[in-house]
Image 1 (cartoon, rainbow, N blue to C red):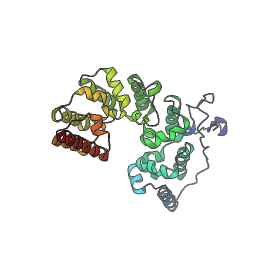
Image 2 (image 1 turned 120 degrees about the horizontal axis):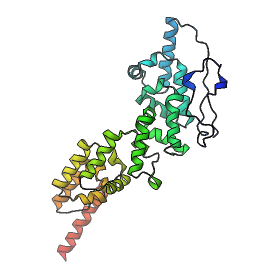
Image 3 (image 1 turned 45 degrees about the vertical axis):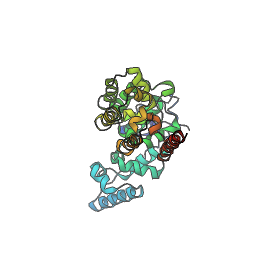
Image 4 (image 1 turned 30 degrees about the horizontal axis):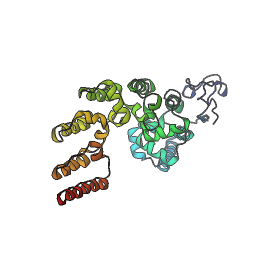
Length: 310
């Protein structure tokens, strides 16, 4: 898909050049800059509006939001600037998201979740993030929209202060080559290195794992980097060590243990095994469905009956 420079300086009068529509990151020689089609802004003289006109414009924005399945009351409350911007600002955001393949029905969910996007300037606020995903993270063009749909917060995260530092940290941790970030794992980029990513690594290393072992664990189960240490990792570890009498070495082999619900799966299945006097490796205990787990228990029971009958 050919990409054009959307807001070339010669398109506008020499003085002034509208700042919001100058893309300083755009490089016509970049091989990936030719992939996102950026709509050309339309400018016209705005006459003075009366109170009646403002009421009509406000109503138009409300109707527009409703058609997008965005809650107008919530949007205006969370983003007061929405009252001041013209309707074409909202339309520019829609055109921008549409350009990367996001359907209108999907757009509503994103904009309702993040109403601050409704008044952003695509060239300053959105396209630099898309460029970052394409050029630095090296997400294929057709997967960029999947990244956004999986984690809309990417669109409101600072490239300099959040996304790029997270990318550097993750690459140092081992997310390179065959383990490079994909549209399934770019959600990790919105995490703060200091407040979210580093504490998870430090917690796992405090269990006696080396940095290399922690790297292998998070590459196999990247969810480890998203779970709360206090509310998720610590309670599950405590139950595993004290109630299940487990060995932390098994967690290295099966780091997905932390992805299962403590109350919904780990405790109930452990209780059933204890009641029957059985023991299973974590993988066999947790990874199978409820039906598969019950079938496994029945197999144990039948095998015991065979032993006793023999």
